[in-house]
Amino acid sequence: MDFQLKSDQDLIHLYIGGEEAGLVELIRRYQAKIYTSIYLLVKDEALAEDIFQDTFIKVINTLKAGKYNEEGKFLPWVTRIGHNLVIDHFRREKRAPMVSGGDDFDIFEVLGHYDESAEDRMVREQTHKDLKALIQLLPAEQKEVLIMRHFGDMSFKEIADVTDVSINTALGRMRYALNNLRKMMQNKELSLKN
Image (tube, rainbow, N blue to C red; front, side):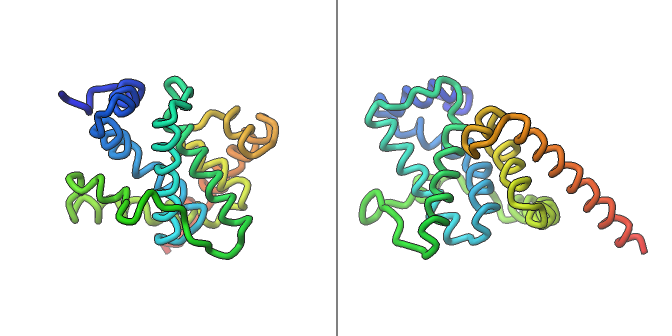
């Protein structure tokens, strides 16, 4: 069975039906976007990995309890869970022990067979390094909307709901974020040429 050709919904049904490979494919499909969206908010690799694991523990518990009802919106749903866990972390201010799915549970081990090559990883990291650095320079509200929209594939209505603002405010923040990024990129190019 070729899981890569299955829809998110099909993979969820396979996983709920006892086929672990359904979840492995969903994680493989979205791990980069979800992890990056968390990392860009917390700016700490270890913490981002903890929150990423907690996000999928919550996903697994929700799926196993039969409470998932976000038809066709898996990535925005998972991104929202991750975002809420980031908010919870910042509310606690101090890093508290993360919830674990069991003594030996590690979501990254589930992905053991899917490891990009070192060369692919270096190319990807180099390509995104400058953009991530520029994103960090944005004001918090603009950065948050950009991350949720680009890395979480969330709609502006979903972003507005999560951040508790109007859709117009979310759209405005995105517009300002893109304009600011464009200006920073132009300034960077000018400084590189001189």
